[in-house]
Length: 185
Image 1 (cartoon, rainbow, N blue to C red):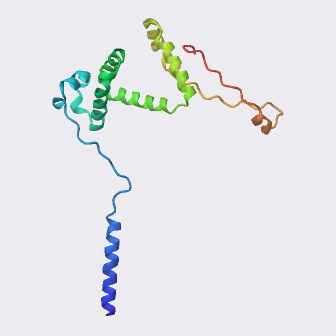
Image 2 (image 1 turned 30 degrees about the vertical axis):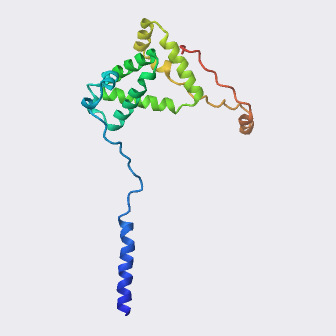
Image 3 (image 1 turned 135 degrees about the vertical axis):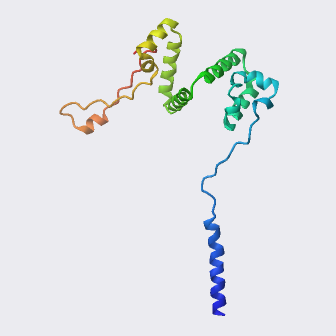
């Protein structure tokens, strides 16, 4: 009887331990279902997504799904927005994989900026966009375009005056940061 209980106990503990060993991973990967290839798109989708046609079958399912969603909303866009979207698709297709990665990284960095800095960058971009092509070319060649569109550096705390204790310097009212005039360094 003791052997039987011991044997039952061993079997029970093995049965309980087995699910622990076969537990699913703690992170689940949710896949995007397969999206249609270029040949399976309807005529309207092909017309809207034409700039991506060459690369469509190379895109992953997530990208295809995103673009199909954009194609679905496309008819509701204003004509100038439609034209801008088509231009952006053509530009995207013409980029190398390295350039695309750089654009993605820049976009991620921009999205992480505080709203004041985003606004400053947008103002600088607007000023740059309004420049004549010759001026834009001159700025690009001088390497200042990166500086022009870069967010302003965070303001350093004002240095403590000599003979002033540190606690007084930290309690002084902060100087509001000045934002450079758009289009100026």
